[in-house]
Length: 558
Image (cartoon, rainbow, N blue to C red; front, side, top):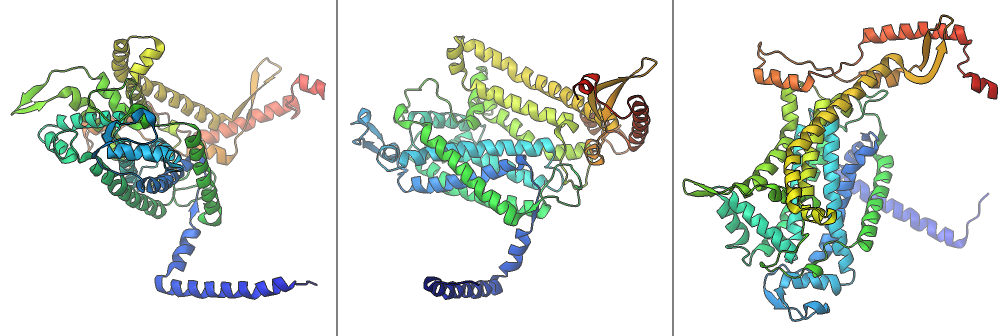
């Protein structure tokens, strides 16, 4: 028996009417846009579960934070290079001439309630956005998630990474302070170093000679409209292709190229994604509230005469700064009336072009080498592709060498070394360290392959030895179950090709480089033989021990 209070009796009809109106409205809307079937399909979409998949989500959530904080900052920032005299509350700048863009940034920092917090949240979210994109890209790279049918999605992710770098550079150039002004001066030099078209690119960007009066308004348009719009469009394409192709999954029980093992988007991943978004938001807000970044009031307004020591761009652009610092001062020369400046062109254009061109084209290079035209939905374990993993680690090593070189003055000061010595060290390291990283990584992967092969054939070593009557020592192995054994032997076994019969000498050399030293997974015949041998060995051990595998010390204790 239940009772109701007068208040609950009044509330029930109200709730019933609200639910009825909601149902009628939802039905009316569904009949016109047919959204119910789409929602049902999307809500029941299965996604695999693994911690490494979260980096893509971190990138998405940090971009949302960038949009929210950027919308707030846009309301107060004035993208004008008009010269003004500062009269705000920051006393060291009283009476100082500066651009209106810099003055409005100071107003956001010191006069707008929550302005400094939002500025720092915007900057920290940008760093997290780029870091998560880089980590997500290399998770895809090392596991082979870029293979057919995801080559185009890899290119979409690559363009998103480049757009993120463009958004970051255009964003921290807007305040028009000394640090960002020096960055723009370098960008102007890199643009002008491009033969034939470089001068025109510089004039188009700056509206005339550097710095001109148009660069900040143009960067503002690029930063808040062009790049974010392109990023939003590519994120939509990226997610649509993700749904169409199915999500990749790591090898495991019941996981094949024809299915997806995981949980539905609703309610499992919807709840997890919501909680994860607020976790990312909270961490970025906490860092922004406690850790200062890009303190433009310390640098002062842009003046082409000073260049502050210890000035570096954000980490994802720092590799270009390092390349410029390491490049020897080669003389300029002229071809057909055009001046070629290698000391700017090579580090500013050629080196980034080679590094990022390799990333963009790698899926197509590997597909050409392997000749594999199958669809792949089960990921590789990185140690099963030693050359690919070695190339990825070598790329990261080269990037880190250049990035650390971008702060060689700080490093030299901290270690009390000569700046010139650090330059020579990193010049050599740029060529030596990636090669060492490649070969060390390749050998480690091959060692892990051998270990996995032994484990699949003989099981897990228990470090327990049984001695027979004739003195023979037999180690007890714990056999693997069929699922764990399958994970260790399921990967593809590619072999080098020989030139001829439609195979070019270049492709034969490439397959030899990729697969010459690869270790084949255990074959079915080897597995059958090992299982028979393990059964015979276990029978002998059981005869000797009576099925009791405890050591004498353990028997004494019990």
